[in-house]
Image (cartoon, rainbow, N blue to C red; front, side):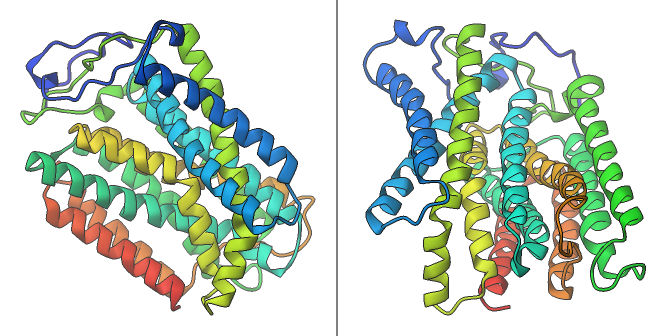
Length: 397
């Protein structure tokens, strides 16, 4: 693989490797566009504001069915708005920074939601952090990865990506997951699948250190390892776009992205009682609620990853998937460790034997997928079957 230097963010690439990329038309100023693009600019700006306003009026209150239906519609619109604004920011700063912005933004808001729910207390909050983090790992490493590989390979014949950067990200996810979710099941310093205070502190610090090292590798020292590549293995350092957004437009989109993600996570929490009632009425296990909420929260990243895969930018899809899994562990564990100082009740982090088997199988299969740097529909299908197995076991444990 030929490395090459990293060009300036927003540079226009005219090489042969970008001719097949579907151009993403972004405007330098929303006021300068007309027609469908002007409508897109307006509704993606208004929707996050509406979502936050609805969230402020409905938070913590019992909701009738009509309001739940309205929140669901606004939630779906907020997801699409978040994807749009993430693409604007990504186009301005370039990859892999764009993927990083979306992954961190979603995870920070998700962590805040977890800590808030844990503060409410109750027996179910003891496993909330574990269930949410593990759901995020399964959704991203199997669901998002599998779907991206399948879409790219069916559309372009074969999915190509950089095994060096993807392998480094996968190794970090596997280490974080094992240290934080597997070891508590086997430690003896505290009763049950829990860490002692010293062990929890070590897990939190290790998570921060590893995530910090990954960010440094991704953005500073080896950025080219995480850039899309051509069929010949050459790094694509620029994308073909009609216009690059201005700094002002990018900053506005960054703010709108934050509002949209707050709306997505908050409204997902708002509709969760209705989801819980539906799950209970169907006689399903309560863990299904966590899976549904995690699917809603990770929907913006899933859509962004699939759209990148359709454009034959599989590396961007993998950056989103593995970066989200890593951020979920690397930020959630330190946050709940800090929150446990003032929160009462146990903090159960250890996985069950079934989930440990799924995690081990996911790591093995993902390693075999990453090593060649190329994937066919078979690899995508294998990951999706693993994701389906996780969902089936959540419904019928």
